[in-house]
Structure formats: structure tokens, C-alpha cells
Image (tube, rainbow, N blue to C red; front, side, top):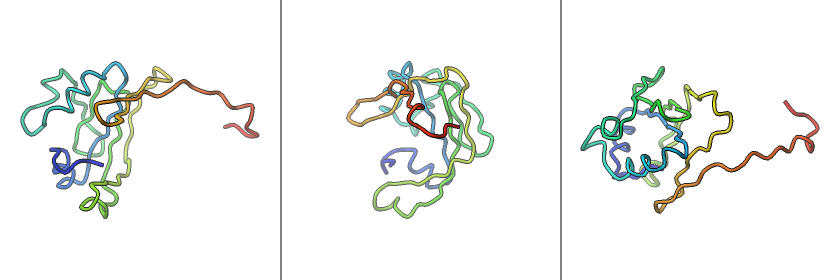
Length: 130
């Protein structure tokens, strides 16, 4: 979901594409600060010292400091007007090989973030493991 008051909402509605960046825990303060200003008023890459990474398939840039960048095209917009709910298709992904298990950052709402948890190895309960 992307709030209709966000600058990103209008850009995605017009272009039909975006990049979803997956930051790490170390970027929490920067991510929170980014969410409290508008790209309509200033260049967020410049203000927060981020590196703009040219995408391979879509026109929107990725953020080089993020662990992963998912280039997306709008796949279905049937629920956008009523719920601000966009359904994207990932058309290209860039994921850093290291660290193998990064502590990625996920917004939980109300100014709070979660990070991914520890890895649980459950292979012994599977009959086939690829």
C-alpha cells in the first residue's frame, strides 16, 4: 500500500513502475528520516548521501546502499483507487551476495521497524532438501 498523499504514489501511477529497495538495520535512522520528507520538495539521494543506482529494466533508480533492489512494473491496479493497494511484478532483482543473512529492515507502522530474525535450520524434518 502506498498512501495517495505520497509523492511516490503519483509517480508510480504515471510511470507504472518503481524500485523497491530493501535496507539493512544499519540504515534505520536514514530510512526513518527519508520517510519524513517529500521527494517533491528535495532530492533525497543528495540530502541523505545515498548513491543512485541505475536500474536495468525500469527508469526508476535503486539505492546502492541497500542490500537488495527490486525493479518492478505495475501488474494490477484494480485495488489502487479504493485501497491504495498496488500489485507489482518484479522484473529484475539485484541482491548483494554478502552478508548471507543480513538484518534487513521492515516498516511495521507507527514509527516502528522490525528486522528479520535468526535463521532456523529445520532440514532434519524435511524429506527432500534442495
